Picture: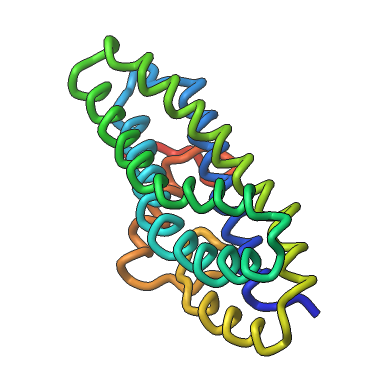
Length: 196
């Protein structure tokens, strides 16, 4: 039977990947003739990444998965240190993207290229980051963690509140964000409707 923590990590990875793919699709489509819904959706999705994965998901992965695996399996030290650095730099990276998006919105097309380049790189990096976690770190954790380890990890991850995760219980503060993203963003995360 899979641990609660691993199920939550995989569900959250699925949500994050869906947001990243939606960001990519929106970027490819561009703002079109009605830029406000485009910028609103992009802002909401970048805010989601800053608010949920950066503040809840990553700190728990670093403390409860990466560090204990590193202590027990030194052969993954280089990858784990790389992933930890990415977690440490993640909040700054997404905040820079939020600023670059705002610059594009307020300053015009001259700022589009920088945002496009950096968002494309960010999406590629993030998808690879999650792939490494799922193909190397989770299997390593399954080898070295005890049943008692999993009890503590499960309890910590059970407190996560990702508004986009399957079966999530939405807290009031995240309900508005969830509905905004789903209403405006394209598939696979949303319905692609515009506000009328």
